[in-house]
Image 1: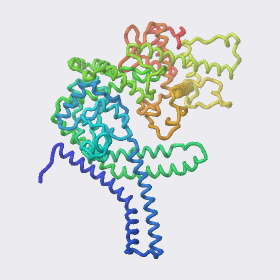
Image 2: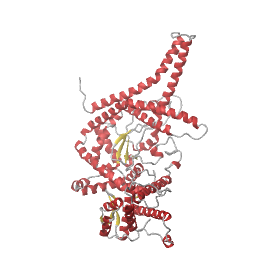
Image 3: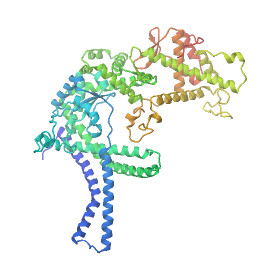
Image 4: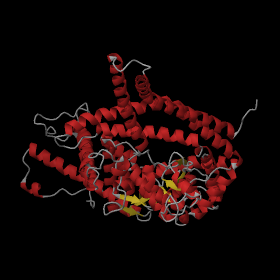
Length: 639
């Protein structure tokens, strides 16, 4: 008995698991056809006289019942099959790369596939994430995207003459070989097409060419099992079931159009989609273990096959993957997110991750090794126009992680790194300072309405926006707070009790104000319920990522009221430092907006601000202001 080892063992295991998935599909089909088979037997037996007779009432009733049940089961099975086949599987948002825009990258992948003795991926795309994978995009619903992808196809496909099926010029005659190929060129008979290679854009900018080749070797090796007919069919079946579950969930939650027939439509739609979802989930549970084992076997086979290609260099490349992920996460959460909240999106995120990782290496005293490594050719040189690709992936990252519009506009414009301190950091500080002072003015107006009547002179004089005013108000609020600060009960008339509720109530009002402004921005971009019938709130069949603008992968949970208050007080302090102490806004690649005093970053402001916000203690902050030279009694410039 011969023992199979190496990549062949993993491929055989994957095929065995794929056949198990296909057997579940065949079993479901057999169960759907079983009543029809029973009806055919009864009808044939009745016609030949083998089963009952034409005058036997019992057999006649049984034939009608079985035939009706068979027709009903066939109808339901056809509906479920139609939903499974036509449902659009999930497609990762990517930036396609045409071959003419990256010939060197395509050549590298072709050479890699040739060394691994596997089919080359059908195309290459970029994603704003630190990961790489193969993705099947052969579903008919993705045909309009494949038209753009074919421009960058790696696999050379045979071109067929544009003539009719029978003969030349549409006349009669026998079908040629190419015509027969066209007749048989259907989804179920066409050989599986190689998947698309999706590469994380940070890898292209941070890794060197040799490291990228070593990193992609196990991924490209997966095209071998992916084009096997059984594995491809099993994957299509599982993806179809998953998409059918999603379609059923959207259909059940969809509100029918208003009209006289709306009740009837709702009465039919919801049970139908509930049944489709139940069947799809049942089949998914049946093939879940086999599908997971199949994917593990495919990964094992690909990893085993890639052992012969740059194995030693792949260990170094894996170390760079972890480093790139850390730098990418810090860049998005600390640097890009504040700009996105301002309606600006950094247009060179991938170039920024290089700067962030370089700064990280300098801080961790790893500069010697990185200096020699950075002298090698970066993988982004494989692109003809890396700047254009960086801009496209940066816009996609803003849409995925923040929910921004798909295209630039007046309220959604790009920003370069050189203009980031002035156009993002300074504007952010002054907008937050203006919001904080506006809420303080509203609180003073409320206090005047419920308290004593102010003097006419004080009523007409506006209160200047000063840092001293914010500090005095927060310290006074801390002194007036009750024993339990969490007790935020309203007054008898439903107001704020007539007095300022302290920092907790100010933080709550900040949360409400920020949420209101974000909702207004959402409606301005057409992201709310009034966006139209195809939006997530007003439609039923739209893709949540394409038709809506909600972030698919939010970077951070919503900020709490305390965090918002601390951020706004920090912004007020920074504005005062810029206006009275000669400080400047700056950008730190790992921490985002920074305050520069004398050309050096001051990172010691967080603790004094938290002492003021949480404890009402202004001592640390006043000491910090005196050290920097900030004059809190001077008015600050607001937006």
